Length: 202
Length: 85
Image (cartoon, rainbow over all chains, first blue to last red):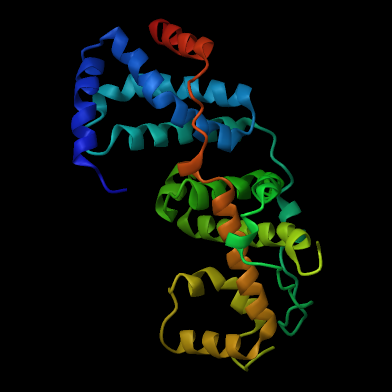
C-alpha cells in the first residue's frame, strides 16, 4: 500500500501522545480507528459478539505494541493487520467445517480430462448483475457458505486485498497452499453462484 | 476439448496463473491454443472471472458502511481492559 506522507504527519501527534501514555490518546485511537477495524472483524467473524471481542483483543495488542510501532507505515495499515490477526485467532478456535465439503463444489472432469459437463453461460456480466440490489446480498450469503478455511483465504486475498505472501504469513501456511485454497474458493464460489445467474434461471 | 497438450482439467488447474499473466513461452501458446478450441473452457473462464468480480464487489471494504461509531459500551470495555492489563 502506498504510504501517504501527509497522513503519517497527521498521525504523529497522536502517536506521540500514545507513547507518552496519555490516557485520552488511547480513547482517541479507539474512536478514530475502531470503526474501520470493527468492519474487518465483522467481515471475518460474521457475528457481532465475536467481532466485538476480537476488536477488544486487537486494541489490547496494539496498546502493548505501540512503543514498537516505527511509523514506517500508516497507523491504519498497522491496525488493519492487528485486527485481521485478532479475528483470525478467534476463527481458529471455532469448530472447523468438514474440509472435504469443498470437493463437491469443484468442477468435475472425465477420465480424459474433458469437462464432465459444459459450464453454463451466465445471463449478464458482473457489473450488470450488481445493478440489482439483491445481488450483493445473495453473493455475500454464498460466500458465507464456503468452508471456513477457504472463505478466510478468499476474504483476505480478494476483499482485504492482501498479497499471497502476507496471507501466508498471517495464516502460517505456505504461499503455495494459499494459492491452492484461493483457486478452490473461487471455483466453489463460481459453482455456488451458477444456479442463480445461468441463462434461463430468472 | 483437448488440443494434444493441455486438457480442460489442466487448463482449469492453472487458470489463476493464466489470468495473472504468469504463464510464458510455449506453455502460454498451448494454453491459448486450448482456449481457442474449447468452448467449455471459454465459458468456465468467463464465469470464473465474473464470480471473482462479484465476490470482490459484494464486500468491498472501501464501500463498507462504516459503523458510525464503535458501540459506547465496547469503547469503555476496551479502555477499562487496558488499565487492567
